[in-house]
Length: 280
Image (cartoon, rainbow, N blue to C red):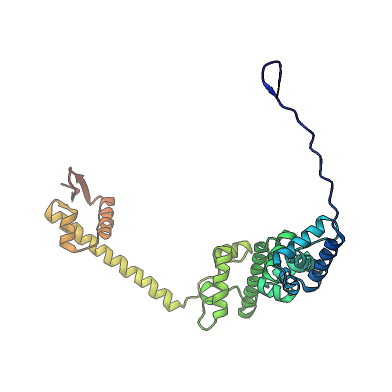
């Protein structure tokens, strides 16, 4: 080994030469062409292997060797299936099927392709199937909603779409709420006014009377609580609960009302809150 002026070893390098391409023997060439002919005829490596009495791997090697020698172009079964599919299925045809709501199984059946080729077409054509399927669903439920409007003669309320015996209307309402986020968002997007509630006059009056009754009961409980505090001079939360049995939420609400109208005041020590009449 030679040394340079600094004492380091100096290696000699030889230029790498590309090997001279080998030429197959006539017998080997004939074998490769025979395998290719059978592969084109039978369609799969396994069928060729069974026909010739050799392994599937050996068939593949013959085909790859033949391609490397430039004798023919070798395509795998999947590549060949994709090539054939591309000849008969254009990108627009594929997109049209998806936009019409056809699922991948029906598309495979329609064009006589397998699922692997379906996904390869999606990738090859760079198609976002989710976008087109979503577009189809939007269109589908807009049409269904329009049919309901035409049948009723007005834009329906959610209550009308949930009408008993109209499962198609109910499903349409749920689908719209899911796709647009809610019926209100759907109406806002298309400038649809929210329908007024179609309640019978008797129902409206009964509802108003119910509110008055609840308010009267609440006021009665507040008055009882005020009288209790005045009679005891000073009380805490537990004493009120033991006396009336009201829920903690209700007691807090009643005490807040009495404090707001200056009927009681609140004091606090280290352990609890106490309530006493304002004039104490």
